Image (tube, rainbow, N blue to C red; front, side, top):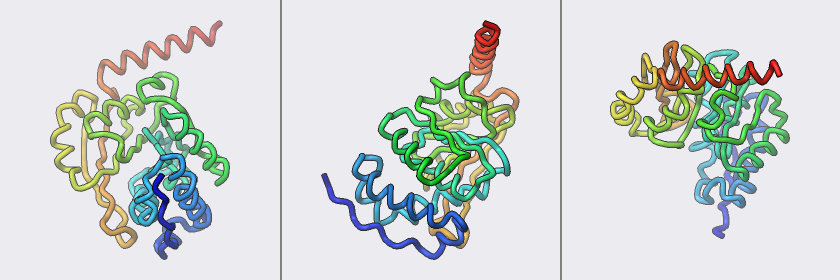
Length: 238
């Protein structure tokens, strides 16, 4: 196994971003650099750039997340962007959704260690939890899949008039154009690209916002949700 490089000290911007949770952010960075690498959750080459490329890049997503909403971080992996977002926003109720056991074990350990009482870890794929996970206001994701495929997983988890916020790179505009037809079929009513983290990260973090109307996921998923709701009501009566 390749030995991980040494974790660099936290940059000054980290104190501004994480505030009272700065010490917890440092502990999370240490966990990623140690257990995260040992368990294969991140590559050892990522350790020197954990702060700039990962923690800060994800934390500034908070600039476009509304106050007091429910959030589902799809394909959370090692907790990016869900855990940095949770560290800076205790007004949110966040679900970290991840299918792999070794990752959900790590996420559960981190959530407990950092005392993130507003965060829940759920093991499963997005398509598997549809109907059992309460619809959320916001779905977040980072480096999970191309936008059209990601939307197919994430948008059905939204409540009506919710939004998906996907952290993307230089290909954001191109992906958005390519996914236009798929997004429309999934009930998207508006899309936009935002650059966040001014004065905190360089380059700025790029966020693709996809807003949905009254039928997140389109007609097909509306029918699946209705069926799941009916099944749930029957079970409760029993």
